[in-house]
Length: 467
Image: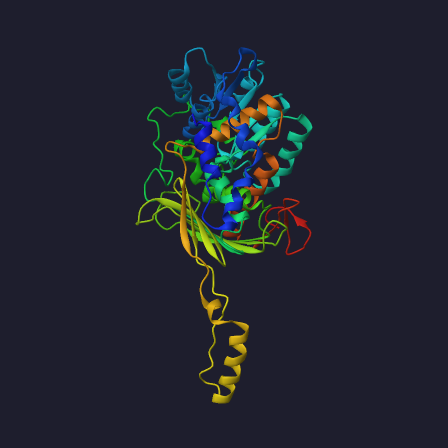
């Protein structure tokens, strides 16, 4: 649990310059709402949930959800019997379990579902759940292909169900602090955003353990395959599904999407207009058909919230320097870095006096230039404005996954908008999965971040994926 004092202290802390100090007043409305569930919840206000997809992410999501007061797990669906057994070991024999997620959706005692299945099932299951009257916490990316997004958004609107996409950074007090600082001018005029994720371990590269009892008897293989191309039973494709285009979205959908959601929250941005990706399978030559190294560049247009800038993203699953990730917002007066559980602002504004290169001019021209230059830039103006570094740390033990769940259940109880609805989710997932299109089809992809559709070119008409 995270107390009110630590959250408020973090958000109110400001850097030493006047511009950054103004950030204290920019606290978003839901920051205080996240505290409302710290108080006891009456039995009549309990939320009963079901988990669909009891893999590592799904079980992790459920554990965070159960920390929110008044939340109770009543059902679990998964296509591997071992995970149904494990769910009862963790959460009690009273759980209803099934291989068929539709049986869970049919239960009147289920108010909301957590969907943490392979990506190729996300859209269908979320739509089915909302039509069944359930609120939905849907793991990122919300879709496998960009063109699947509008139908999901439409279903949310028609059913009036709450849906939150599971990119927890948008609920983080660290990202809220970064949002305030950038808005207050901490880095001056933004021109570049850079982010990387480095991993150097088998688990980091999705080499997950295969259960020794996996067989056609313990796994509902046909239900896993769904609308993907039919294949004979091959457990590696199920338990390491992120490595295959048929079921996952590679590093684009799994990791780029987190970076997009963070950028869009901090900058109040709808997204990029052009996407260009490259990379390759450099190290993990294990049969996967997605890259383990991926680099991508994105063009962001000017908006009322931010100037035009470029985004550079890098993922490396064989980084010999060790594991880590970092996010940098680069402006003309400073750099803001998100790393670990903190935010660092390094400011070094440029001098007002641009200097001069006149040694090759005739002496008379030099003297004339210097006289005019000194009038325009008195000697004292050559001094640099104050430089320095400021660091803001989250409270010890802080985790944004909990706050993201609190936001979701506040929405379930109050019917108020959540921090990451389907529109926000598609604006993060769209360019993330389109990086895959750029990579595999070796071309630039043009995206309209307002209409959330692929286009044939700058200002061109909408197009379906691959055209």
